[in-house]
Amino acid sequence: MTMSNRRLSRRRFLSQAAAVSPALFIRQTSSRFASNPFTLGVASGHPLPDGFVIWTRLAPMPLYGGGMGLEPVLVDWEVAEDEGMTHVVRKGKSLASHEWAHTLHVEVEGLSPERWYWYRFHVGSEESPVGRSRTAPALDASVEFMRFAFASCQHYEHGYFSAYRHMVDDDPQLIVHLGDYIYEEEWGDVRVRRHEAPEPATLWDYRNRYAEYKSDPDLQSAHAACPWLVTWDDHEVDNDYANLMSEELHPEAWFRRRREAAYRAYYEHMPLRRGAAPLGEHLRLYTQAAFGRLARFFVLDDRQYRSPQACPEPGRGGSNTLSLCPERLDPARTLLGREQEAWLDASLEKSDAQWNILAQQTLMAELDLSPGEGRRFWTDGWDGYPEARARLLRSLHEKGTSNPIVIGGDVHMFWVGNLTTDFRDEHAPVVASEIVGSSITSHSGETADHVQAMVADNPHLLYGNPEHRGYVLVELTRLDATTRLRGLHDVTAADSGVRTLATYAIENGKPGPQGA
Image (cartoon, rainbow, N blue to C red; front, side, top):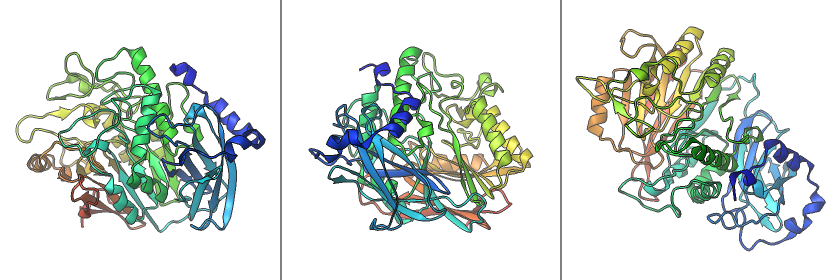
């Protein structure tokens, strides 16, 4: 089936979901499925003071296209104030259609702010697991405490997703995923499980890859535990892609179709609002989410709009590691795209939150990869776009943005550091704190000795650790932000334990993490 035949406009999708008559679907909702259609669990996302998104997908054969056929299905949903689902406060029916892989993105409204709710779905005699979600505080609420976790980079083959089991035990009110939710490619020497199919390129392929990942019980448990905010990185499409340029320099028309398929599958499988549904090849992912006056999250997209990486290897696109590259310093280059840059700049200026958290993909601080003489930089991250980074950090400084914290992933290592207006000037003001989480499973490829040498050679970096997979837990109060770097003992063991590797505190009004 061609991409054009699979395409359904967002307007048509929304109008169908709103106008459907329950009487038309009695046969589907009363029929029995050959097996459980809720194999991929449930999820919730993007909380507001009066509600959140709840998600599921009907997929009795998840790794083989879902197994639902072409017919639409009407699904019942309900939200309750208790885990036993005895005090239902909202309920309704929503259409799961073949065009959108029989997924649902229900925007629940009319709830009370800053409290836990439980939800589930029904179709015929089948019932989904019960999920838990939480509304955000009122926009003007004076909030005393918030706990959230963030994660990234979960290669299915490199290990088990046991980090999520420990994350659930830490009881966050929100999980932020910073990209590489799936991996399209195989790499690495140690693989504890295998992808069921070759590298994806079509909508069918990407849907099956998401289904494989979302079949993991620990990942399902984390989705069911609390709401998520999400953004992507490169592996949701193709390693190191930049806008419409692939690492392999595929013809643009072919890669455009591949990216469109990948974006559509991403939307289908994430608890995103229906307003994020892709229009053709584009998906507006960057957004913000407020948690009273305590915290505001700015969720960024550093792939869809970026300039191609500077000075790639001959005959290839994507990243390179190099010393000399005048193109890298061009002020016209952008990682976020000019429109997103302008949106972020204006949004930060309007923010009245005490803590302003930039949820983006990678390490923002400058990182000289060659300790000692000479300087070498990796061009896929912010070091490939230093003028764009300088614009952002200068803006934070000039606006006096309250307590900016940059969180990231991508590099498969823990990093903690100071973000300054000039990384080569030891007297430059610190304008933001940076915390980068390691991967959920993906290998790092770095040695501890080299990382420690880089920390010593880059004085704005306070901590680096490539040896553990894991996540970061953050607790916000009016006085400070406490960050705990949580590392697994052994990612290749499904029952791995976890421990806190390091703890850093950021004081209100004083940028820069301090070791606890």
